[in-house]
View 1 (cartoon, helix red, strand yellow):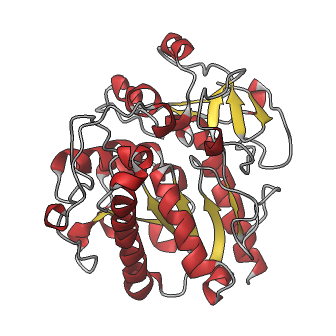
View 2 (cartoon, rainbow, N blue to C red; view 1 turned 45 degrees about the vertical axis):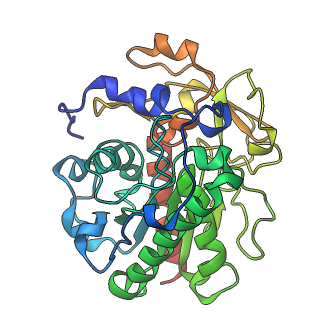
View 3 (cartoon, rainbow, N blue to C red; view 1 turned 180 degrees about the vertical axis):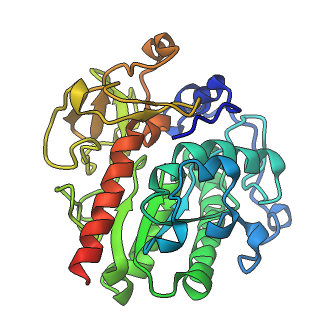
Length: 343
């Protein structure tokens, strides 16, 4: 794999330090009422400009993680990125998809650090959407609900256009993280659970939000590495620590082992396949984990500047890139299993 030298190593802090997760945030945000006149323009997903990633418009950086034979891939990946707007002074409830600062974060942070893990499993589709501000979780009854509904309406519309214009009956991997999981979990309920499209679901990777085992009627948590048709989910925290509040964020949640993909409760350093750092390098044997109630406890990862991780307890922002190679290999395994079963 080529190394993406143009990425500053300090960009890692976006995923492991700078993102303030909603369950650790204090309600000190500037805000405003949710008003119709402040709603950003609705995206048109028939236009390529409304998509961050389409198979025919991979960025050069993303191509370095993707299959060299993209036209031969038989699977699609539909990815929804996490919350990227968290500035406490930003009073917007939702971000327009023309916001260049946010779009840069989508392409150079979320897509490269998360969606890239699936770029050898299938053709990747990533819609821009009017994501909700992170305060929408804390201030759910003061405008947050409307903001999240607006964001989901975009994700839903994008998925419907994807099905009509791009999918052509191909099997699908659904991927989300954090707010992305908030929305993709609804997609699974509305489009897949007990419906004909479920037969095309290879797997859903939806970490970063509590997912209960009984969320769906027909879609079940997967507990073996090559299982298909279900979902996996987890929330990562520093080993030996719990969030001080918001137990409903993790308690009783499905907690997949993102290294062994089975019911193993602990792993060793040697089992860890790789953490993607923002210098483009993958560091294997970088961490060990232990599964507890609703959390994946991780050891302090070993990588450049790992000293700073000793000050961090919340690894939410690294739910995917901490296990990047493990996810990458597992996604390919599930694809191959599904394709073999449907020959």
